[in-house]
Length: 156
Image (cartoon, rainbow, N blue to C red; front, side, top):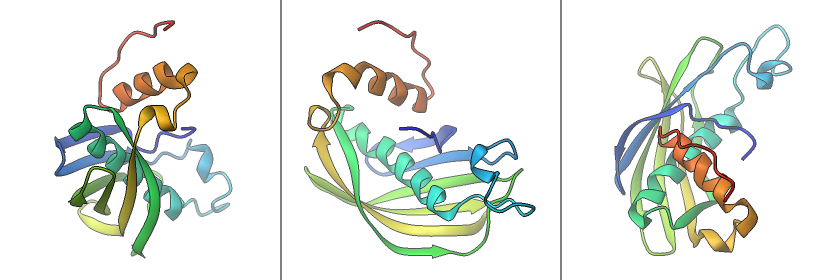
């Protein structure tokens, strides 16, 4: 994952609901050209923030053994912009959860005002099916950071 679009998970009800937060700053490289003189956080990255929050939520019921791979995005709505200085709350709620798939409803808000919403569909696969063994320690370390844990880096 090149960009972490969730700064912290604020609330977690495993398998049910999660709330993450992304603080938009003018120093985000993403705003340099989107748009010059009128910086707006790209809507597609709001969706990615929702997907990352959902991925964290969906990892809980499997003990982190399954990876949520985004397969489709439905019913997307953008209602307003996120700008530098905004704190975006990313809320995801599970609508359906099976062994190999999940569907969540997500919404992004700033100061309790909706700015985006979508339904996200995931395929749940074993980590070994998508993460090469060489990168698994890095992936697990990154997932721990997203959970708010800061484990030491090891040479596993």
